[in-house]
Structures are given as structure tokens and as C-alpha cells.
Image (cartoon, rainbow, N blue to C red):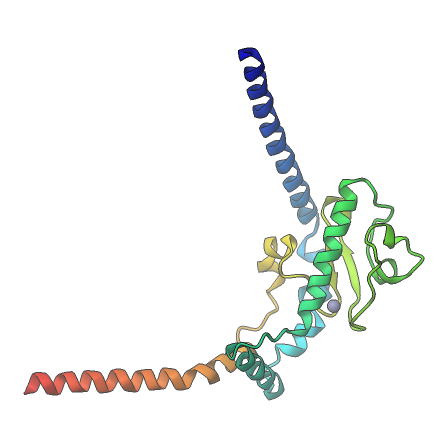
Length: 215
Ligand SMILES: [Zn+2]
């Protein structure tokens, strides 16, 4: 009986270390994929996509949109920016491709709109029902070896901010972003009256204290 218990313990320890080694190898694979992709071979559409180029411009139209978005957010409604559904879609596709890669089911090496949305592309074997293109501006591509972790991006909306690739390369991917954005101006417009009121209250309180001390 003691021997069986000891065997179970040894088996559990071996299983634990095997799982640890496996997860480290998976992480290394992902890191290798990221390492193969340098700033020089990252497409311009991914570095600073059209959607953000247009929305980051300091124009009254963009500031106005941000003001409406923030007011809706602060009043409890749940507004959603246009790029969110595209990034969610990328997450769903990447997960499906990673699953297929782990099961050695991949029959393609690159991802594009033809593969994702053409009925005869065979993508339905990876993700069923096959997705449909909901936003005509979206044009998807893969980057690097999809067997080592699928990195997807859209020409118009860029890469998913929740993706490991974005998190690992954030500093490289945000070099073109302007220092001041329309959302910063919108925040300033919304919160500046409350800051001014706070300063006036503090000023009045300190003045009142000085008068009391003088008495
Ligand atoms: Zn898109």
C-alpha cells in the first residue's frame, strides 16, 4: 500500500514538472515568433493603422466624438468604439487557429480575407460556422509563422490590444501615436470645470482659516 502511495506521489511530481516544461516550451515558441518579427518587417498598416490615423487627429470633429463617448460612458451607457468588434474578431480567429495548430490540423500558412470568408477556402473545418465579413473596411492578414502562435491584424483597425504580440511589442507599436489625443482634450474639457471649482473651494477654505486665526 505504501509503495502504491509513493508511486502515485512520484507520478504526480513527474506530471507537474512535465506540464511546467510544456508550458515553458509553448511560451518559448510564442517568443520565437515575436523574435522573428522585427520593426523593419512590421507593415505600416499594423504600426499605425488608418482608423487611428483618422481618429487621433486633433480636429474638432474627433474631439466632439470623444466628448459624446465619454459623456455616454460616465452616464452609465456602454458605448463601444468601432475598432472593438474587429479586435474581438481577431481574438476569436487567433484562438481557433492556435487550437488547430496544436492539433496539427492547419492546411494553410497565411491568413487573409479570402481564407476567412470564401466558402470554398476550407476554413469552416477550423471554425464552424464560417465567419462573415461584417465591416467592409476590415482586411485581415497574419504575421510570421502561424504554427508558432497566430498573430493577426487588420489593415484598417490594426492589431488586437489584448493580443500577446501587442503586449510584448507595445513600445514598438506605439511610436507613431501623437502625444496629445482628442480623448485627452475631451477629458480636459469634461473635468476642467470640476478642477476649477475644487481650487476655488480650497482657496475659500484657506482664506476662512486665516480670518479665524487673525480673530
Ligand atoms: Zn478591422
